[in-house]
Image 1 (cartoon, rainbow, N blue to C red):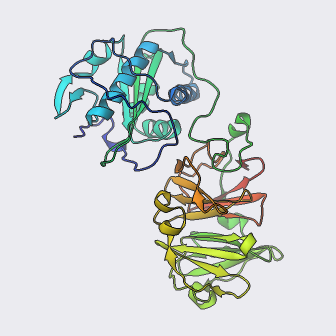
Image 2: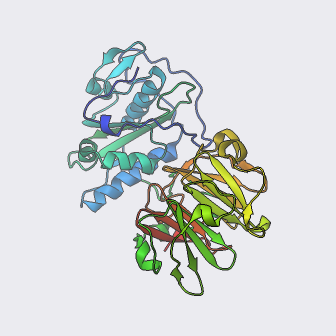
Image 3: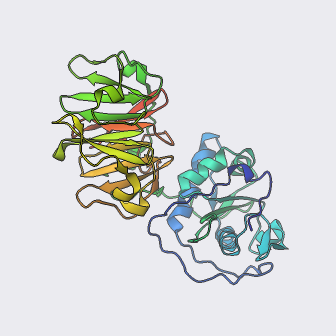
Length: 409
């Protein structure tokens, strides 16, 4: 049973059926019943996530000329308690409930068992600190709490509970206090979901990532660009890009520095029966282009200029199995031997040689995984040959991404 406290979070509550990395998760069932005594203790399962939320809160407060909030351990214990209780007793509300939907404790009765709390934000479904902060900052009530001048300190609780049945897995709580503490204001590390391979080849530094890069108009950067939107893009031997839109495609030629007139896909790509291409990429080692549409794909041989025999084939079964998306929005070949498949606000990293998806995926598209890319989802992606540049398209805009420096520019 999931209960919402309207309008505090109901409009931004998400159910994300995704996999969260490999973080240590306590398997101990929480025996919390009734109203807490204030002595309960939930061990943090990802303290770096909690401290990153604190840092991001203070980033937002600084933008508005406000003093930073300090860490309040009492409020953190209150927040972790509530996050764990919601996860284990299967509800979503500021008030506390026991199994079966029985309310046992009102919001501030609960919080003040632990310390002096004056406000609370809750969230369910977001996988990373960046994601949950974006949800809160786009909700007027939550944003008001984050930017309140009454608050002096904050405690944050994050809890993850695997589920076999539908429902939220990720729970977040912010408890605000008017008390001043000696706690920190948030560390410098970026823990928004990346790892040493992140969304790419690594190698960025945090100071570089603070610089905002604006996306460019496709029509300004790609002369004679004929479309309203790019559905897919691929590099092609001979220093060319192919951009697909609807049932047509256009060629960017490096020598002429402009796009060609559109042509129909099915009349010019022998054996391709798709009416629309969702994603595409070129793999140099076998001289093939892979074209994806719906839940299927084909392998196109550049030398013979036709689709290989036996295609189309199903995407999910042949590109990493159950962790692969059933359909994809974009595909990006990378010089590290990986292919990145994007769907919505997530992506997976596929090891071409090992024919499997790397551990820890899917991940969210964010500033920690693709520094400088501020799209929350992408329509198309493409790498120029073996690099060093990739391109990310969304609606009428695009970013250039420096592979070696690991950032947009």
